[in-house]
Amino acid sequence: MVAALYGVGLRGGDRYFCPSSPAWGHGLWHGTVAPLALGIAVGSYSGKFSPDRIVEALDAFRVTNLAAAPTVYRMIRESGVAGRGRFAPEKLSFTGEPMDGKTWEFVEHTFGRKPCSMYGSTEVGVIIVNYPGFEGFEVRPGALGKPAPGWEVAVVGDGGPLPAGELGEIAVRRRGEWFRVKDRGYVDADGYFFHAGRSDDVIISGGWTMSALEIEQALLAHPDVREAAVIGVPDELRGQIPKACIVAPGKGPGFARELQEFVKDRLSRHEYPRAIEIVAELPKTPAGKIDRKTLRDRER
Image (cartoon, rainbow, N blue to C red; front, top):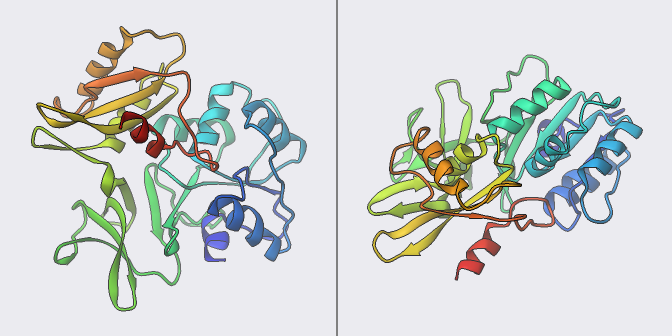
């Protein structure tokens, strides 16, 4: 209920929709159980996901509160049909993975609302929220938000909580100890938390430590890249190298070199995908998140 009230912003009278499958926690708890417990009607999505179909539904049912994975918003952006109907949301939220800047700006520009992140894990539930629908709370681009009521959250290192701006692991206080959520991040001077990738998504290549998330965000800034996923793959010389799998319709193998230079201009010169594979689509989980485990399994 904490997630429903402060992460999704559910209130009586909302016309609410969450397209995530109830086979996943987001679709079960935030998409089905929580709204029904609050007396709010829910919608269900059946069959293969289609951005055209969901935009039609959002319009037809006059949805005012939408909660979805970032991939859903990204696919709505790519469909080109958003903004043509009557869909006028009051609250927009997302979870499961960070939203790239291009999609974040599209959502705010198209729907006139800032998308609100909520963050947590299966073990602890939602612990950081952006309070959608709450007056006076500033939603900042790229930020996960601030701790949900009842939670003590910090970014910790070996010696406990770290000062503002220092990179460490996001942790929540449980039973008198810091429980690490296995994600890297930092907190700014105003108490906003920022995600820096999964702890196991760190790529160490030739002695350099790189963030798969940062490389993905840089790739997604290119106007021709629709989706991107970065994983570490074995390399005899460097131990590991970042490999990017991207969806870029109409682009051939020569596009890889252009992308590498594009990323070098945005990150450190060593921090770029040394291998790039252009694919028709990326594997997805039932929740609509990019399935990086499947990509790693394919490499193995």
